[in-house]
Amino acid sequence: MKKPREDHLICNGCGRTLRQENGICREDFVRIVKKWGYFSNKDMQKHTVILCEECYDVWTRHLMVPPTVEEDTEPLIAENA
Ligand SMILES: [Zn+2]
Image (cartoon, rainbow, N blue to C red; front, side, top):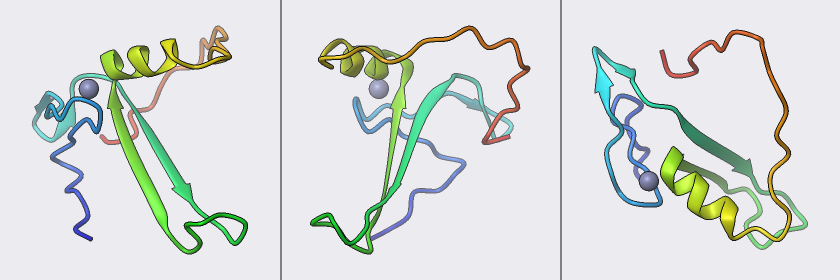
C-alpha cells in the first residue's frame, strides 16, 4: 500500500487536495490514525483517514451522539508544519 505524501494531503471524504502554501496546509483538517489490534478483524493494520472540515461536518451530522465540543484556548501548533 502506498503511503500518501505529507506535502500532498487529500481528503478521504471528497477527494479534494487540501490547500497548501510553501509546504504548510492552509486549512484545518481531521486526521484519524488507528492501529488495529488483536480483538479486531484488522490486526496489525494501521489506518489513516484525513477529512476536510466540510466532510467532518457531514460525517458528524450522521453520528447518533455528536462529538464532545469544549472551549480550548491553548494555542494550536500546526501538526503538519
Ligand atoms: Zn472533504
